[in-house]
Amino acid sequence: MYARSTTISARLESIDAGIAFCRDEVMPQLGDMTGCLGLSLLVDRSLGQCITTTSWATLEQMKASEQPVQGIRARAGEILGGRPEVQQWEIAVLHRKHPSATGACARVSWVKAPVASVDRTIDVVRLGVLPRVDELPGFCSISLFVDRGTGMACVTATYDDLAALEASRGTAAALRTSVTDEVPGSEVQEVAEFELALAHLHVPETV
Image (cartoon, rainbow, N blue to C red; front, side, top):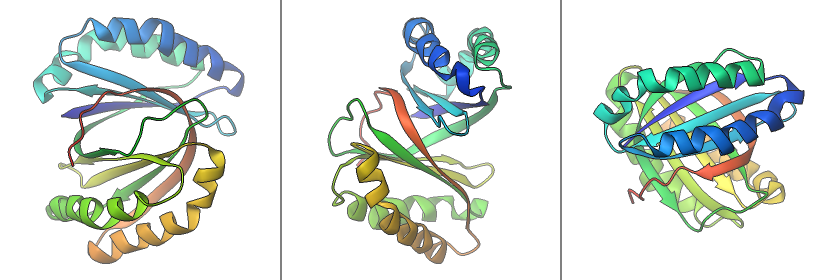
């Protein structure tokens, strides 16, 4: 399975309009595209960062959707007031303990590893990180997206609410260190926390 993420640095006053656009216009249009499994939207209301992610059954279907979604993406940029930046991913790990609900929050960690170490990164997250976060209070789900061409990896852990997200920070920091220790040459490039504004990615579990 595959995913395409679109990141926009938005005007703070435009975030609610962007959420409404994704919910009311983008999701119905994507639902008519072959292979699209769903959509999620993360927003940071303090910095304006918005990340929309669409999931796809195959790489070919995701590539075939690129031209049809260009207009949708451009319109989202106009509404939010920022330039869309696009990244394509392979969905390597997806585990849900329970569905998220209103008020859920997520922490996203971007890790850069040597290209030859992508499979090692996947193993470390699946066998080392996942079992530990699965035990944390308020934990909902975790995903790992990878780009085998660049070595980039994106880990997203979702929690019931802000309190659970905040309580997990210490464990999350230790787990990030364990990943870089276990994958030589890797480094954490960015960590950010978000409101889960839309949660309709609908990706089947991989573990």
